Image 1 (cartoon, rainbow, N blue to C red):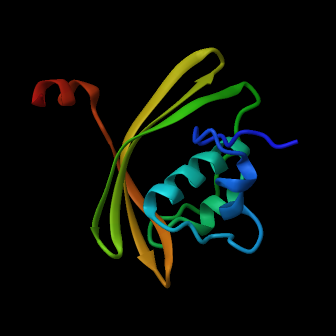
Image 2 (cartoon, rainbow, N blue to C red):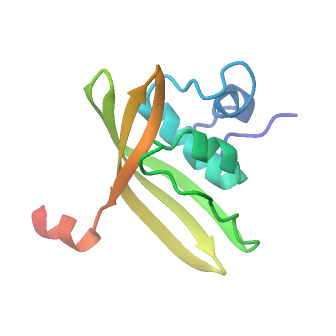
Length: 136
C-alpha cells in the first residue's frame, strides 16, 4: 500500500520524493524544483539527515528541531521555478501548516546551487505579503 507524496504531486511517495530520500537515487534530485519538493516532504516526515545533506555547507545549521507533536502540514504550492544557468536556480513557494490550531503560511524565494552534480539549498528570502501588494 503506497501513500501519496506530501509534496502535493499526487504521485506515490516512493515514486516521487521517496526516491530522493532513500535508495539508489538518494540525493540525486534532477533540478532545484524537485529538490524543493523533496525538502518540503523531508520537513513533513522529519528527515533531518536528508535536509542537512541537501543544505549548502556555508548556510547549513548544525541541527534542526523535530516537528512539534501538534503540527499538521497542509501543503506546498510552487509559484515559480527559474534557472539562472546550469548551476543556479530559484524556487518561489508557499508552504502551509497548522501549529496548535493556528494556520501558518511561509512564502519564500529560495536559492539553489548545483555542486558536484548535486543540487543544494543555499538560502531564502521571505516574501512580505504587504510589499507584494504595494508593488503590484
